[in-house]
Image (cartoon, rainbow, N blue to C red):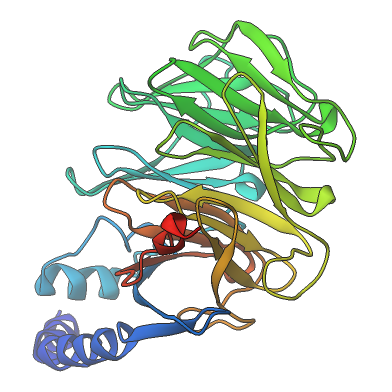
Length: 349
């Protein structure tokens, strides 16, 4: 008993020093990361934090609690190979982790972490894409089973939509105006459009390299103008279409230079209409304006803040915070503070 009390008191004495050390580390690691675009206009982006365990996003124990948990050896849950990240309007963070057959749920408001578990014979095998609707339901694509799932977050209840089984569903986005789900079916080389109950309404595209055609697409997002933005991965380009499937524009090409892609993975759009695309081969994130013109790139191979190892999913929340899945570093990196409007050139002739 005496040894335990001594260890506990030592822990209490160490807490202020540890807290100060962590604060200094946080101060250093939150320094702005500077990015220079091809046109030499500076873009300032600030690294905020990373999420790699169950405690990083929602749990900040009191000092005595932290010491107690250290002494009893409580281990946080870690990602195995995260793929996608999504943040809903209530700032809950969801991370798909196909290698562990899980979706991680972080609820900062409730200071709660949990995983979506099998229920009544319904479970996830390879969850990839994530999207939420205006009723705060989470939609999940399962690339192994071909099904779309709906998760009732407040009820902790998972159900499979009675939709047509897809070949390999990956990216997904919900259009709150039209109340439709847009699902990338990679092996069908299409975007499948469904109602919220999973009824297939129509399909967009076919295999090919022409306008509105796809070659193993993987991800999709929707910008503030209601355009759907599709990562046409093996065509090494991004295509922008109307919700009805009318082709508007495309950009990209095969290559490692700015404006081109080797293996584009995630795509997201911010409130100004700028589009962010991750590349899992070059370990970079590129920024394009509303017209698809390259304006900036950031990132390189590594494990420090702002560096990546095969980045995949990209998400931008309602406050324009940028979330990037750093897949093989097993973490989510969060950035904020864009100081240049990538759409400045939109008014140029």
